Image (cartoon, rainbow, N blue to C red; front, side, top):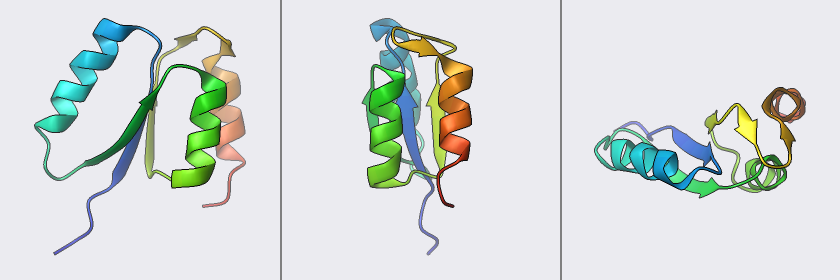
Length: 77
């Protein structure tokens, strides 16, 4: 059996985070490794857990989501 891809969710809005968590809970072929509230936390957790997918909000309390994507793209694959 194949290992399911891992997903980290970066979202500061609680209702949106709950909706995504509910959707991921109903997807047995995906393993949710966490939800964090800021881009800085997301980068830190991505370094630690190395998720295959990072879902992130475009508006983050600590800055531009595109800067987070740029930083994540520099992590080793």
